[in-house]
Image (cartoon, rainbow, N blue to C red):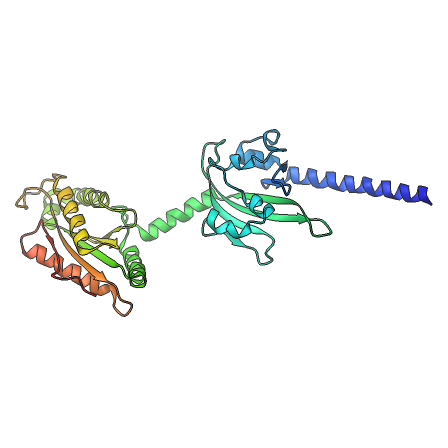
Length: 331
């Protein structure tokens, strides 16, 4: 009887080993880049597809906890590490806005750009991490699979730029301006901050176009767009509002601060020395209207546009190549 039990036990071990070996071989041959770590973060499996994606052979990473080096320049946990360490709640601080938990709560999914130091080029990866548990529910390993979505992401970015960017100048277009102004208005109202707007118009542009042709006019607008954008902070927005008119949204900026920015823009454009015989200075200049609002939820951002437009009209009326401010900030 004992002999029979020993034989059955031995046969069971052999079947388990065969199944384990088959699973290992199957994972090794998967076309999807896959690696497996144990609960301590040590790499157990690094398949051929993962080698091709990262440029790192399995011999260099299996048995180590240095797999993060295959994806990032600086040390940070992979998605599998977060799952192994019970740190799933940190996913949104380490991955971009696409990160999310699966409905069951066991798997983690995310998308982000990875440095990929060995292959020398950034890749946008979609990552899934799943736990492997024994019959008692104890974690014994974590499997991470990766999908290279770089081409799809770049195509998406290109489409988004087409939808929000002006084709001639590369600045934000009118649609993007309207959406951004509405969002910044609401944010300023919530936080009790000032919101400033500049309306920038190229002086005597029709005459410039008549003299130098449409190609010359396009080049003029492109150079002015670059000059205006060079004076902006990272959270400001410059848009081509229409024709030869540009709009600049200045979040959390007082009227005095907006006036300083406007004067820098005016000087920068004048210093381009684009010839224009229709101007008193014989160079292309701009007129700028500025306005500032202490946004209120019941007010509308179109009031800010109207105030800046009125200031721009005054600048034109007073002789061009100047900035004009309203008498008072409004709320």
